[in-house]
Image (spheres, rainbow, N blue to C red):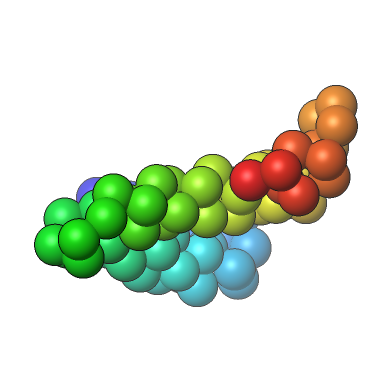
Length: 76
């Protein structure tokens, strides 16, 4: 899988490796927040909202803006 990403780097640009690395870190932190015993489920819920917000920012910036993208980011 990694080799496939590296082969397509030339096609997609130089940001592919940093984006994949950031995505993995973000997912890892989200999963650890959801699995941590912090005494409240709000930590996991907050992590899920942050991941959703960050994904919406990335989609609207690097793919195409979607309706009410800024408002949806602020809500999450």
